[in-house]
Length: 192
Image: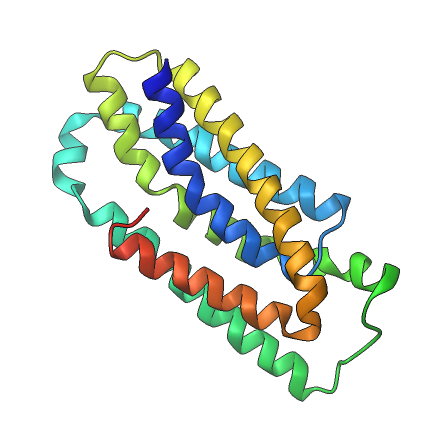
């Protein structure tokens, strides 16, 4: 069981880092719920999907899952950079700080972009699912442990990101996009 918790922590680190980037633009209860649900569902479901797909698919995919996940994260970060620049050019400064900043944080992380981020972060869990099948680990227990650790680390990352974002002001969205790109590069380099 301790090995499973260590695997869950290793997998959850990328979620923690990405959640810091998401939290930079501020968080509210809705954002916490959305990030927790999306990241938790992907992190829990992908090992199960990996087990269902079987070990033969693992051999075919091999290390490609890392590249797919990294590419999706980098693309999401680049998209975030483009969107933050468009928002700045449109003169949408709005009110910074206070309740309006908190209320707008969920809108700044569109569900589609959050889903792509969750998918990109959990692609490596397919390989974990393949391995779970090979080692006869109870996949349901593994999925619950991985999902719970992922949700915990994601929420912790959101809170840390929100605190950093409050200090960064309007640059928070740009910093968040750069963090997603950096996490994608780290995944491509095999650091996560």
